[in-house]
Length: 180
Image (cartoon, rainbow, N blue to C red; front, side, top):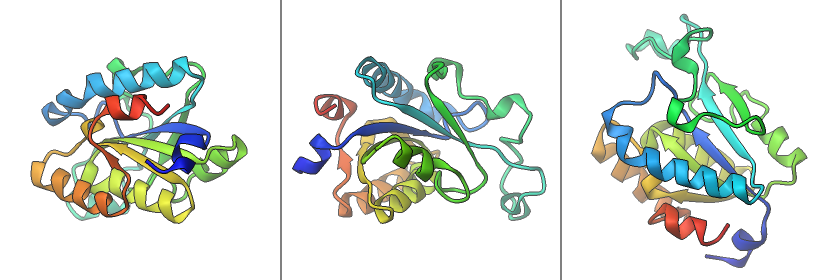
């Protein structure tokens, strides 16, 4: 790990771990994300939940994507296992990236955040897009591989390989916790 990652002020970004987005494919990562959040909060590291919050007529549904995470429904809430703390931030998003059209970048910069630990679903879509945007915006990025999931294992593995080219992927949450 390069020195700037270990020295920069950090935040954890949890992407789309919401009631409508979590299925059986997510079960293996929930305990890992919960552990990461507990360790981060214990060290005063901010936790930000980037949550799908869409309107029924959003473009994504026109392409056959299932109608879910609709604003005002129970499905947009973070899953019970990861219930946000009072100090956590929830950012609503209507696009794949947690940055596009949200105030996430402003929120992070206002807090002096330089390094993001990104977790969530789906690795091949919202996590990957968030990681790319974070890197392009100048953030150091860390992705614990065992804190991300996708309904299609091949999509998950492909996205991790792409992110490995950015040198952001770490094998496990335990590797990441040692650096926070």
